[in-house]
Length: 79
Image 1: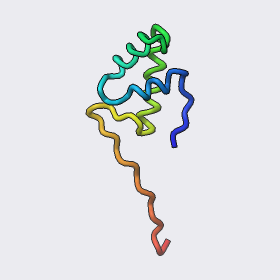
Image 2: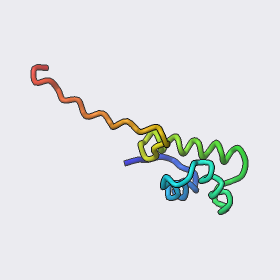
Image 3: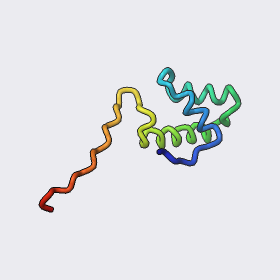
Image 4: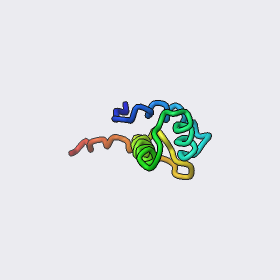
């Protein structure tokens, strides 16, 4: 399971991440709905949240497939 500290609008962002819009459009939608703040701080927060979600494998940027998680390495029977 993913555990991360997100801004109050983090859940709303995640709900909007359905692959139909780029991150910039999602931020504009959050701002228009009065959910996210205005200015560079909101933009930086969005990028930070998106980075967390991408590293966790929750979001997959277009054209950059997330590599599969490595399988657990089995111990060699003679090791």
